[in-house]
Image (tube, rainbow, N blue to C red):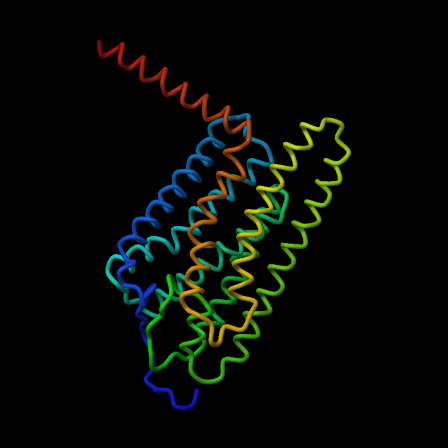
Length: 299
C-alpha cells in the first residue's frame, strides 16, 4: 500500500477496546463469568453424556461433540482476551497470531458443520476434517500477506478483518480465497439447517396434540435463535466490506460469537431436555448417597 512504512512486522500488539481503557476491569469480570459458565455447562454435558447410558444416542453423541468444540472454541479466544483486558495489551509473535487464527477458524468451522449435520460418526469425523482443512487453507492464505508499519491489532483476538487492515501490498488474491471459503461454508450450512427445520415444522404441524406442538415449536424457536445469533454475527463480520468499519462495533459483534454463543449452546440444546434433567438429578442423587455413606463410615 503506497505511503505506508515498509518496515516488516514480526509481532503484533493485541489491544481490545483501546479507546475505553476504563472498561478493562468491568469487561474482565463479565468475560470471566461468561467463560466459567461456558466451561461449567459444556464440561457438565460431556460428563453426563459419557456417564449416563440413556444419553448414548446419536443426538447426544452429536451434542457431546458440539460441547467439546464450544469449550475449545471459547478457550482459543477468551483467556487471551482476559489477559489483554487486565494488562492493557499483549504482544503476539506472528507465529502465535497465526496459530490462534488457525484454531479459531477450525473450531468456528466445526460449529458451523456440527449445527448443520445429523449426528453420525462418519459425518462428525467429516466435519472435523472439513473444518481443519478450511481453517488451514485460510490461515496459510492470510499469513502469506506482508504486514508492515503499524502492528497494533485493536481487536479481541487475531482475526481476519483486523489483520487485513494491517497488510501492505496487494492482498486481492488472498482476500478472494478467504471470502470464497466463507461464502461456500456459511450459506451451505444455513441451507441444510433451514431444510431440516422446514421438515420438522411440517412434521409437527401434523401432530394431533396441541400441547406437543407448542412444546416442539418452543424448542425449535430457541434452537433457531441460537443458530441465528451464531451465523448472523459471522456473516456480519466476514461477508461484507471491512474498509472504514468501526473497530468498536466489530469488537462488540465478535464478543457475541466467541464468548456468548458457546455459553448459551448447552443451555439451549441440552440442559432443557428431559433426559438431561433426569441425568443431572440422578448424578446429584448418586453424589448425595456417596457423601452420606462416606460420612457414616467416618463416624
